[in-house]
Length: 241
Image 1 (tube, helix red, strand yellow):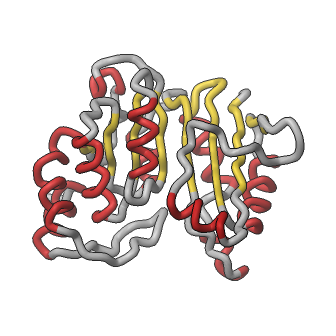
Image 2: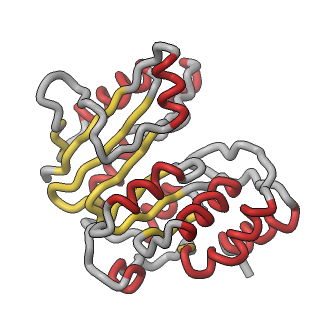
């Protein structure tokens, strides 16, 4: 019998460390704290979604037909929890393969009493292909993905023509793909890929980038970068076809 994502999470808890077995992201090695272990054991059964080869029924998952925002790579989950708390009229799904991040997000979401958030710990591309229906997402968020800053590694960046076409299939008409990065070269790469992608329109009124929307929380990481003079670039593209 094949091992489920929940089995892998349990094995990570048992071993006290994360497991390197993903495709869309590279897992940062790290140890689970006792609190993260407890959160996974206690809250994953009610808040976790497993990879499946049939598509999720969002009404069954959330008990309503509110629009769904999918965030790919939510890190430790602080920003995702803040967005879900600020917008109870929306449903949020976060994908993250870093198990300490999953545990931390589960704990923070439960402490906040959220009912509009679900988490997935699996390769994002497989989830998109296998488990998410076409035209079923209102928003896809990709904030500060691995920039693979060395030129020979640029092909490993997740924002590529095939990936954004897959996202376009999953977005509803009028749905948006929102990206943010603190690497200018990656921002330029994102804009180049998206401007060439069919079926998308850049919502920026001037150039390729938009000011940080109020709904995207300013993270501690981002604040620290701003204090050091680092830039951050937000890009938002709407599905028009």
